[in-house]
Image (tube, rainbow, N blue to C red; front, side, top):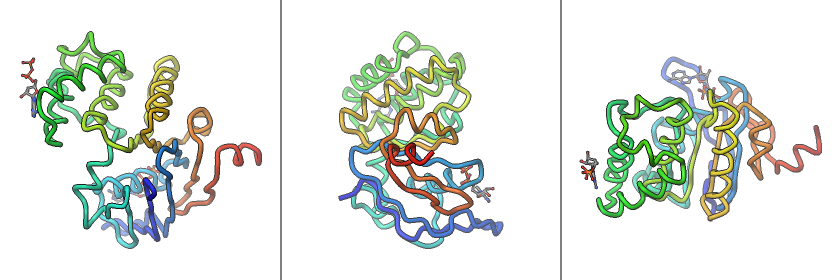
Length: 226
Ligand code: ADP
Ligand code: ADP
């Protein structure tokens, strides 16, 4: 079974823009996978559909065997999403943000608190646990979004442009953290428009341009052609 299995995916927005023109993509369990492409290529649309946040027009998406429409709840529970924009309540504390997130997935409160400690420590946010999120730097907010996405212990983590606007030191420590949790078995998919980021992290890569997958190969094979 694949972590992700996308067949013939098309998306035309209500306004008439066709963002995806027939995408086929599979990601193996345990993979570290990059979806690389310029702005407007269709990366966020693809992620939105995988996470059941955007309706597809045509095609099928399976997440660990669960259909993203028919088995939406099961498919979603396999995924931790780190969206591009900060979408937490800035006036809540870090603890509230991550514990509440676990609550949405039915994680018991005591388990949620133990996990919150684990992930906030791993992401170097534990000292800030009782601060409100608006007090955090951009890099810290980005790490908070990763901690929050892990609170229901998903099998797959999806990050949309995870290091956009993050300085190089924070970027390196985020990369190290992602590599570590991938080695522990979590499947990771990230979108990026930096080849360098994909090169640092990913085993396999798909390149998307104007709603079409123009390349889908191993990172090694891609680098050999450059
Ligand atoms: P990327 O993430 O690669 O920058 P997107 O998936 O955001 O690309 O966008 C792909 C195309 O779909 C672009 O032409 C964009 O303008 C369009 N698009 C994205 N979101 C919407 C929306 N909500 N409504 C209409 N068009 C959209
Ligand atoms: P403290 O240990 O600081 O008293 P709380 O137990 O109040 O922390 O939890 C922090 C926040 O998380 C509160 O807003 C609480 O309502 C919320 N919360 C804690 N556990 C859950 C849960 N399982 N589901 C939903 N919300 C929860």
